[in-house]
Length: 625
Image (cartoon, rainbow, N blue to C red; front, side, top):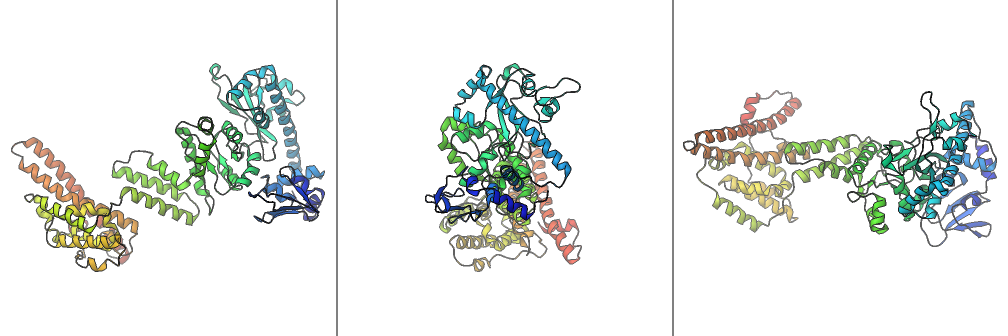
């Protein structure tokens, strides 16, 4: 289809701009021009002008500017070609067609539009007739007034399998089948698709009927689905269509908001309550094409799905489909409805104010991902938490835009760290001294585990952990309780812990650099290769490895003490003591293996960097003890 500049100029010249704008915006004559309050933003005094002579509109408030075609695309939400076709039809101009096949298809679609318009008129008349009484009673029970019923074009399809076929007998049967109004099965005679249903027209961006949706009125008598939509046709593609778009588009330009709900009745209930900028997908999860369509109207549409499990699954499917499409400024927001309620239920129960409060504070896409995944299953074990992190990172990896992907990974990683390794409340220095004193005075003195803890200055793992805190002083407060448990040791270990607490206190108080307070912390042996001691390690990896090393360091002497206790009661309970001893020794071995793995992981990286194969694995495990 070739549209030359000359042809477009002729189109603009044949259409009076003010007459088109007057259909949706009240204009006042101002000399040779027109004026109005701008339809693109809220204002109290007119700053929007329309000039038929110059052929453009302009707002001195928000800067909106364009010709009659731009008005149709920006205010009506039409595509460029749809705008041109509608204006050309009004101007009596034929749109140039380069391809004969396209001409034939356009003629077919035009014929189907006539069929759908006739069907809609017939459905509306049925609603007003005697046979539509039950449908009218249903609408009254839903609290819908006559204005809303007329505005949204409610109708009724009777039970008779051939009623529509007879009413539209002037159209060929194949055309009724192609329009989705009749069902043709094998060699059987075609019959009506919609029977015994309350009918709603589905319209395109130009307001033309392209499909229907029907709600069953007496579900108890049949296994038929509650809602039934037209099938895909030359006019209707459910993955590209949003219900109520032709009304919501202009409304969204005034509020700069578009709300997406699950079903027709939610759209109608919100519109009846004054929330006009509402659309719904066609009974399926929101598609990529529908998301792009929404982004043409606003940068961050608000998804407001039902508060049941199915609604939340639909929200997550929409989130997953949006992630690869994200681009700067464009995202989705989510309203979490009260459990068991949809927007229509909430409006009838608590009124518009409740709905406005939810819409005013939607959750971001990132927040929705975090809430869904962190609540998806219990997080009792390290394995559960690792699964959570894996799911979060998989979501982030699906984002195509590199900068947005990196920001999502960082933000989700920070949230995971705050959850998995929560910071503990800072305790002032004088309280720390009291806690340490209590730990030391109450510490038992007759177990093998604590005797080993008191030799902490010679313990490579202890030295490595303390040196790790010296390298990462911001992590001290998070592991304060573990340090208090280690503080029962004397000598260099206790002195080093005091220095670490001084450093933490200086940081919390906003003081100077804590480096001077950490000079007393002895450097670890060169053979100790934990990631948190190596320059250039990813900060997140260092924090996680340090946290795990602290946990293992605290658990190891406790295990040794428990083993000693089990050994002491061997004579009194040989079978029970032996079983307990074996269980504890197995756990101790797991700790030693894990420490060896942590050291080997770093050693392997160093060997690759420097071309060094390093010491045997067994030797490296010994180095961590």
